[in-house]
Length: 391
Image (cartoon, rainbow, N blue to C red; front, side, top):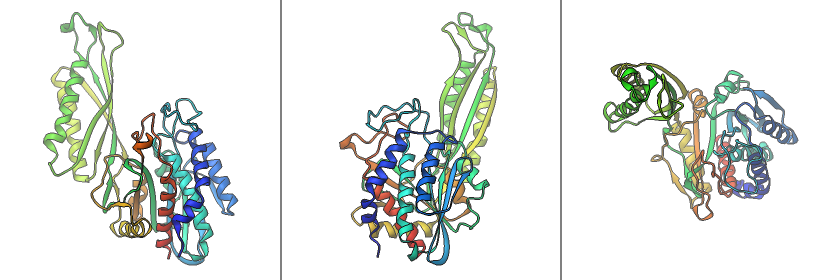
């Protein structure tokens, strides 16, 4: 029986070098040309037939097993974020204003390591591994673009696995939930239009700033008073812009934010109340509101049977680890959900924080970094899980 963790540990220098290189050269969604080029180079060096340009800048390859069987998709995201890095690490971003603040550099390095591990054991696999390196996970629709380009076809995918290094939990923790894992998300934009004028004569204006403040407050009542106490939803206004100077009431104010839910019934309820609340409050203060809501992702819902097989693999591989199988869900969203809507899938969280080393900044924070000891743990679990499905 293959000792997957030992194999991953023996490749740690390879994984770490890749991760640090990607970290130093981050690229935004659909601009991952350098990253995709390295991925294609590494896969080609294994002797795999590589397809590039999938869904824009995505890369795919197949590892054919020694016997017939199902097709397992393993997916890693490659894109970075428009954030200026403040880690001070020797491998900090060299691309001003862009950094890997969510761990996708680690995901890409992990999957390249898994490719080497599974390729070496391909004769023992009953089926096919499809490797998918995805662009533009951060709200730009990369998974949808890859699906449109046929990533789930030729050959048809039967199962899908992905993982995320997770700084909300310490090194050694693993999360594989039964059922819901990550929330579905919407992005909204609100424009409150009034009548501008001098701040010293507010009675001659229709103040969109006052109306916007009331809208923000009223929106919090949706979750507090329209969503059941045992249901889950989030409505967050995250930006608000209006006015240019201290003594002028502007003609309009713009706000953006996000809505997060798990259940479709809750989603419908929140979206209905959202529109009515914004319009009614704005109109009540003499303004009008323009509301735009766009879907970001559906919820990530693990297939229970597949999740349990991954859980069994995790227990056998890391018996000393804390394995969370049902209590951990997050209101964060992930476009892996689009793939998991179409094929049974399981999403895996790998604890990556280490407070003693100062490696515990939150995702999307300028000081985000991980304990790289999480890399071989993630590679081992992803490889072992795929092998278990192809046994």
